[in-house]
Amino acid sequence: MENLTTLNPTQFEQLCTWSITQLTPLVDTLHRGLSQANMEWLSGHLLKLVQRANARLPENDYQILLTAVADEVIGYGPIGEYLRDPSVSEVMVNGALQIYIERKGKLVETETRYKDEAAVTRAAENIVLPLGRKVDRSQPLVDARLPDGSRVNVIIPPCALNGVTITIRKFPSKRLTVEDLIGFGSLTTQAAEFLKACVATRLNIIVSGGTGSGKTTLLNVISSFIPTDERICTVEDSAELQLSQPHVVRLETAPALPDGSGLISIRDLVRNALRMRPERIVVGEVRGGEALDMLQAMNTGHDGSLATVHANTPRDAVARLETLVLMAGFDLPVHVIRAQIAAAVHLIVQQERMRDGSRKITRITELQGLEGENVVLQDIFLFQATALSNNDKVEGALKPTGIRPSFTPRLERAGFKLSGAIFGAGTLDPIGQQGRRK
Image (cartoon, rainbow, N blue to C red; front, side, top):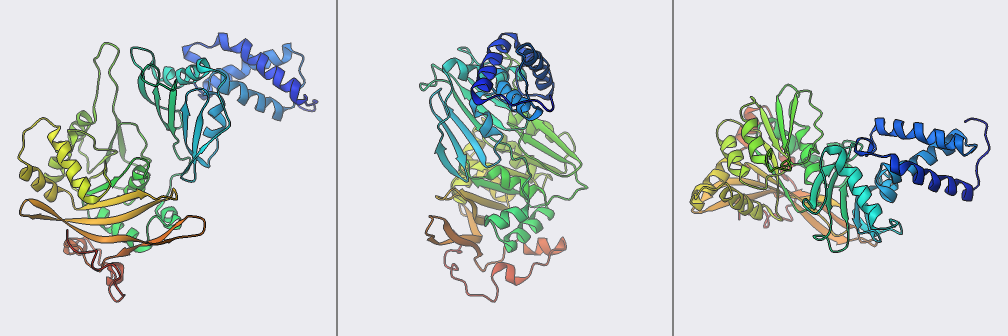
């Protein structure tokens, strides 16, 4: 296709539309989705159509045509361009006529539209059918994953009143490092050094935060501090963690089959992971009765475990864990649950999405044990917002409270003698009062 003339825009659009019309009836379940094999299959058929139409296309124009046709025939429709855009982190389709994207932490409505509701349905099917799943009246809610790891949720009418609704949280193409988070202002060098020592010393850490606050990203970064000679088992509902260590066993839940059998939950996987000789267990998100199994594992030799939980503050995270333990089906007294939490969890790292769309660590909090019926929390680092800049950017810094954690001797026995400057020694303590126990 080299040294050929380029079609004018009208001719190119006509060729694209005609090709889509010709190829759509040829697509079966096997050829849905943008896998490499499907792209090669589609390219072979498209090339024949181009030759049949006596079209003269340079290689670059042919690749543009192939991408446009693939989006419509075996791909995800007009949102394909946003899935290829590295600046877009989420894509939200609210029916055929409304598409939002998240860029730099802000939601933006696009001018892109699907042709009709049938086109959105076809895009949803191209996502779920290659995974052996289906989305129809009998199963109107589906969680899935794109070939690149991006997480997808699909919900269709009658449950979705706006029409077929697709939510895609893109999988980052580049694994973020602790240096990246420091550069973004999400944490400081001192806090990173402290967390590295805590992970290497095998403390149990919970990452807490709301939806979209960046918990999984932070868990990825914290997990990078795990030594490379340890066996790690990850347990996730939808595999998102990107650990760089060589010895990682990845476990993922499985949905029920159409007859109702085959359901594998997070709790099933946590229990199984305990039998796999793990040196570390990393749970992508604790959201049910597996909280009890995880706490028991932390208290019986599986130290150094990491997990995330949905909560707005460290205190809320403790309450959330209490609730999740009760979901295990055992009628345990509250003080017993709290004693388990206080003994098992050493640190809670609170992550928040700020009003300007940025994600920041706002607290690093130690669990110091029980005092009466209450779990005692002590802030070690605390984010102090100063002001909003002219462009509405949140200004501030994660500062030490001036208090050393009670597990400092354990860090020192592991070879980590952190300087007093990390905890604010020798500096003015503007947040010392906020750093008191609570």
